[in-house]
Length: 181
Image (cartoon, rainbow, N blue to C red; front, side, top):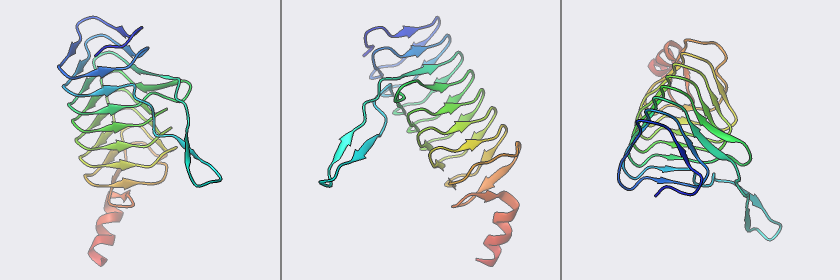
């Protein structure tokens, strides 16, 4: 399904079952594998006094730049007002979730089942192994590597660092701590 007013560049491959919601922007040479959803509403609700939840409307878009590949059954949510952006050269594996207002830097790769919560800004050339979880509203420096099944709950300011564990710590610090655990 390709919604109204979607812009799709040249030399794209979109496999069966993909859903691209209205108004989304897909660059050139993009591959989107089966059953991926681009542009669903982000997970946004406000609590009401009676204990119920009111949906927060998401009116933004998703922008996927050139040379991106997105695996099967991934979800990239549209932003509340502006854009969720996947920068040039990113590779996103199967079953990944990119929440509303996220920006993923150029040439970043994410292995299966990585989840990035809303409004997180990810640098360029980052590597996220399988099942990495990223909390919302974080900033992650360029060239950051995060090991499998790690959970990141704070900003990473220094480029080129390796993190591991839950909560994620610098790799060698985690290994020393694990010996004590």
